[in-house]
Amino acid sequence: MPPTLRQVAALPQLGLRPLTELRRGVTVRWVAVSELEDPTPFLEGGELVLTTGMRVTAEGAARYVARLVDRGVAGLGFAVGVIHEDVPRELLDQAREQGLALLEVPRPTPFIAIGMAVSRLLAAEWYGDVTRSSQAQRELTRAALKGPGPLIARLARELGGWALLLDASGEVRHAEPARARRRAPGLAGELERLRRTRSSRPRQGEAPASVALSGEEGHVVVQVVGLGGRPHGFLAVGTEDPLPPSAHAIVGAAVSLLTLQTESPGTRRRLRAALGGLLLGLPPDVAADGVLPEPPVRVLACAGGEAVLDALELDPAGERCLAVLLDDGRCAVIVPDRLAGQVTGLARASGPVGVSDPVDELGSPDQGLPHALVQAERALVAAWRVRAGRDSPHGVLCHADLPGQGLLGLLDPGLAQGFAESMLAPLRSEDPSLIDSLRAYLAANGQGEAAARALGVHRHTLRTRMRKAARLLGRDLDDPAVRAELWIALAVTDSPHTAIGHAGGSRNAPPEIA
Image (cartoon, rainbow, N blue to C red; front, top):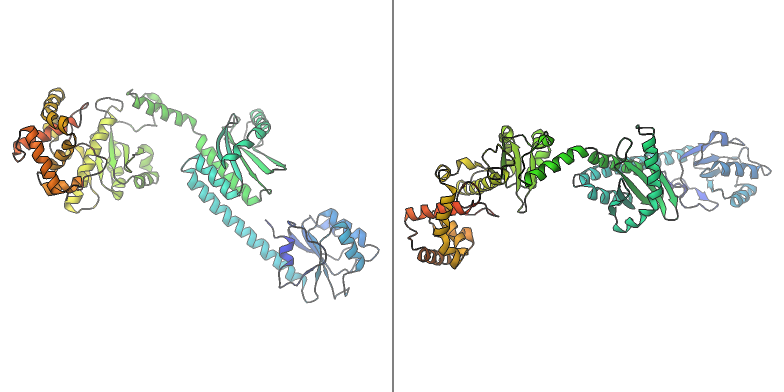
């Protein structure tokens, strides 16, 4: 906002001396020099008028002051030592009586110096407003990426007030701070007025998009969210003081971001319906066209987590993928098979990647996306092992390249399951934790020290567990044939309801076998 008259009067290089009270909040929009008896036809209000008093007389002082007050000038600067040695007593009395701010301008201070000082203040304020507005809009954009709630919270913080996001019916969706919810009922009439005007004049530019209110509790602005005749929602903000132009620009940016989030409801509905169908095991229908990746697809299990999501946001291939952040910090990406190489290249920059086999039917309960995720996670576990063993950069491993896939694929799942359960039953009934110890022992090719490190236990503890497992199983764990049978049994039990996969299954954290 423009500098206040108090700020201008306080500039030490000007030497201005207030002769009357300078009211708080009075701003100076410009400086005008005039020796006319009536300068008001050439003023707009808000100016600091400068004069030497050439046309000011004792008899005309009252009329002169009244004209300036009626015009709404910020104040009057009277130069002494030019025409008048002092400010005329009549002019001072009228200024005090009528409430006109009066400043004495000393003889050494030229009017041009006052004009230049105010101009610099205006330029600095304008630049500051532009900078603050630009920075605020960048912060709002970042917040909008996280959803409307963070956007509303950031907007309230930028304005130093409160903000409400209401849906089309007027219900509060988000409020910052939370106590701002109590203001929603008082806005119902304004929302209804905006609805009526938008529906009767739906074309852009014809219907008002906002209303401004002022009252004892401050100043409120309500804006419509959405285009066309039917609003998708409303944004209301409130502050103690009227919003300056820069703040209006910030609110406008927030409305634009919210509108972008709400102007594709059809796509969001199709996406939600398609994903819901997949969760129910239903095949994707025509409504999912252009929303879900086109089969065949692969699932990538990525160690990079959020970094992978950020990379997909910046690449056109990301628009054809669906990415989900998993609880353990990793992420899964459903990607069209034709783009698998490109997306894998993006993901491997942030960590190892496991790649599933192609999936032709997204909704298949046995060979669909859930099974592909298991494959990708198994491949990711193996990719960690490869990287640890070779000290190589971030690697990519496909499920089809895991050892033993050809053999396991030949087994009948039902018969293999019975064999596996029978073989491992003594361990499960005695101590289920022995299964994990056995798995780590086999994964380390019988190297007890490496397996112990993977489990986080002492090597003697692992040795004791393996002796117990050998006793319960009645098998010699040093026999390669026995280890092969146990490896197959673990692979089968890792995939009890789907095709048999790689031994060891997916784990919440990759093993750290050296």
